[in-house]
Length: 274
Image (cartoon, rainbow, N blue to C red; front, side, top):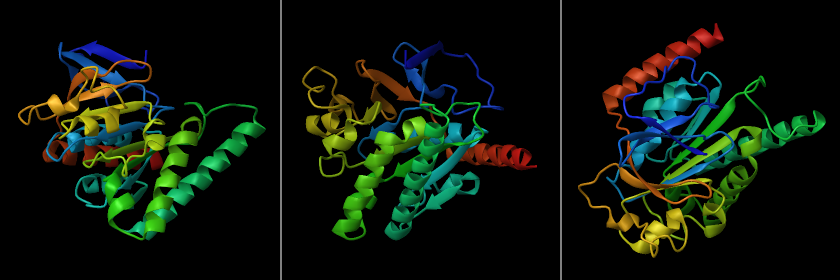
């Protein structure tokens, strides 16, 4: 099973976390912890502003920051959503399409290099025993880089590079987490969406917007993020590979929680480098 549940109240030690460990997302409607196996997979998160997307995104980034075997590559056009984690990131890109494209090309080159080494070693994927970090590439807001800044050619190249990393990066230990508050077909083409093993839809304005995240036809079957009310902040529908969307409330991280985690993650990384 890709989607793991624990009884609410169970604890997990944060020191010594790994990207090969389960990533905690929140609790389901029965009060059970929901965790996912993110390694070798990618996740797409969408929903209208204020629905809880940013908090969900920060939970995943927090796991990566506390994982000793993770390098954070953060892309944030607004700078304020992921900016709190900049001090513990390997790479941070703000509102700069040229730098964003350069960093994605570097990730693509690193992906190619890792596959060359795997081929030479007659292996299919990296694992936790390899002396390379898992790269967690987090993009918020996707629409900023694909529809707002830059030329049309640059926006199209950004989408192509992200699609390549989502398609090929998993076995090379490159995980893509992409988020948008504008779930539409021009922002998330079907050819890109269908490559994400996990899709998490928070409150959307229309049935079609919900289907843009989860996949065509789910709203008609009753799995519709447009039915989530504005009062249900942090509630979303999570679809795992081969399953059905499940209702989930994201764990909450305040800014003060995040600052504390950043300080702790910084200390862990200093000790690792020593």
